[in-house]
Length: 125
Image 1 (cartoon, rainbow, N blue to C red):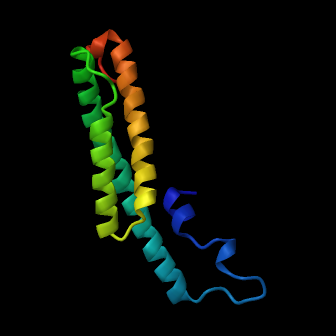
Image 2 (cartoon, one colour):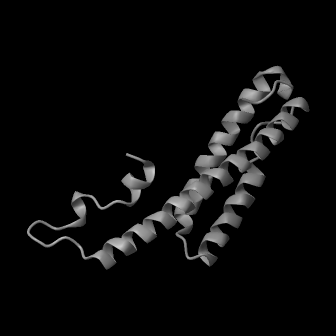
């Protein structure tokens, strides 16, 4: 079964017990929406990959110059900025902050690893 089949095809939960299956227009709309979700998920993954490429470069630069892996002042500014962006996008700012905190923790972990390995001169994996 392909990824699109599992994500977009109707499953057993599409129909309540004792009821007729959803009509074709509902199934078509579910498929359309799920395809959009799949495309957005792919874009998010690609954007995160690009972000981590940049943060790896930051980590190598910090390690080479013996700068600390974390920058609490920048992190606080980024969280405040992301909360504002979330509010304007009508996304829960608390959710956006949790997501950014998760990403920041992973970035710091990468920076700490780079700092331990040849002060950032070793290529990133």
